[in-house]
Image (cartoon, rainbow, N blue to C red):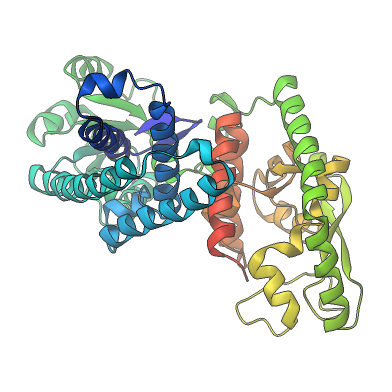
Length: 460
């Protein structure tokens, strides 16, 4: 796993992306040299071909990203991968047609473009077959052993098993006393760690003991580390594979001593400045759309066009959040606001389409402009729901350390929450975001949110 944008990416996918970038560049250079006659003619060309080719390549990789060709799940299933490659090239052609129509000077020579795209398809399809064959044949998997009690070891094993594309396999765990760890076998006490690593070809040791004083074989670990074995803290390993913090109550104090959770004045200023600018321009651009949506809501059913609800913001303060009404009047008469379900009878005909397109959330731009919310942050809930969850879930009030957002890490990682367990899991994602808050992570969330909006995923 490689840490970029304050989050972790599978090394396999990064290698795949880097090699494919090189292959795509080679494909267009070969096409350009072929149609230019020789390499010198291409290099000395004053038509700005390098810039035009770079633009085509950048758009191609955006299309590949939005068609999920770099999703970790791809390493597990690979279903429809080659069809998606063709779709990515097709989407590129459509986007280039629009771009070249608007800006003819950006157009790359037609012969070079066509030849380059044919070579791109040939190179990428061939390379992906070779790449995945190599992964399967060479068995490039890191063997992991956990030094911890069974409960946490089982949680780590569950996350690793659900993500086989990451390239890890759990061998077992060692602990002072055997505990239930599901399918993960108990392999003995920590003093046997050196022999276990040698005999089982372990490449990563994950340390998660709550009380490590005098119990860790420190000298053995130093020797193993000097031999190239990775020694990693269990909570860091968990976050790197799960993209969320571990919320087992006896371990929550470890968050106090971990890196992150520092909301500096610089970060606060950055969040407010970017939110203000984007919300201002967003309101100007989407005003015609919101006007049409308001008319449609008014004509479709009785009740107010704009729904005003109390929500919990930063530091637990209450604010009014604005949305287009998508349900029948008085759909939430009860004190407990039920989340929308699939085929929810409370949702109106127009409301269904507003939810599918996320247009119902456009009035939140006003909340962002006012400073009640940021573009990116934990999702705000109604006070009654927040209070109930805060009483039941440890650390829940830590969600209020930052302003809530229209989108966020938990929203793109999970769907709607119904049960208490759902909300605990969503809190784990929210705390991961707060812990790792950065410009890079916000950009990643923004890109993923655009993908969600484009394909209508997760709406109810």
